[in-house]
Image 1 (cartoon, one colour):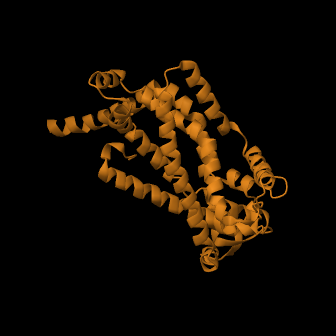
Image 2 (tube, one colour):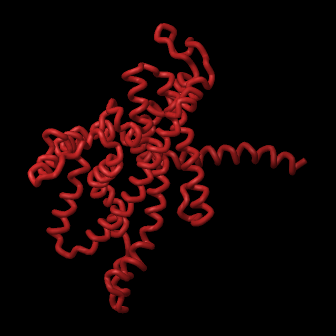
Image 3 (cartoon, helix red, strand yellow):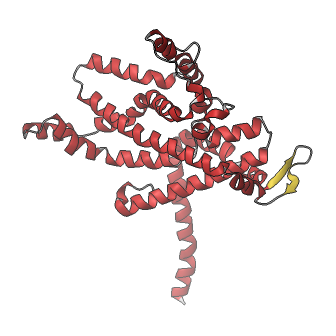
Length: 323
């Protein structure tokens, strides 16, 4: 009888302690929670509250009826995308561009961060960082305007130079084959300097005594970079890679729209991505259901890619996986 009585009195005490402990942890970390509050509100308002609107992808939207009273059509919007072949072309273009952005971007960012770390002149280092960061803050509209002034058939700097030296001008805006190179080079020019900040900060966290010991042992600069700095950047690279893969199906709409435009049909085979297609369905055809279907497909496939990539990383290097 005594044992039963003790157990019946101890259970509520344990629950109270758990509640007290949780409340104390929240209270002790109230400053961090307040700092996170804007991000929590942002995702709640712009990511979770709009989720019922996904139903739009499964209806034939009628403005007079609204989303939830429009005729339910099931997967007809997705079937239309598959039958027309647009979905596979858009997916291929979006993934191909983003893979090029991720791989080439990270390689250049690591190289720039290492070169900045090797510079000994502090003034030159600061000036170099500033000049490399500037393209990131240039508006995509200005980038498109600069590209047009360089590549325009009639008035572009490139064709003016070619005419001056007796060569034929290049019809850039009607040649889809050269645009993947133009878009990738423009993206790298605009993002490499700013993206190198993370890798440069990681290098700054490296224990300098390790590099000094390697230098004393006779390791030259290339050996220190190869055997110390690059392996040290591996966890940072993997984390950034996983984060980047989360948006592998989300194209850089500002870059593509301002460089190419949304209505240049001659360049669609190599420049049309999911974002520009959705934009046209919304602004030209006013087909909100089809645009929502594409966006839903984009989000689900992106989630699958992230989970798959994280599973592979967890098998190869468990300490570097996200979860």
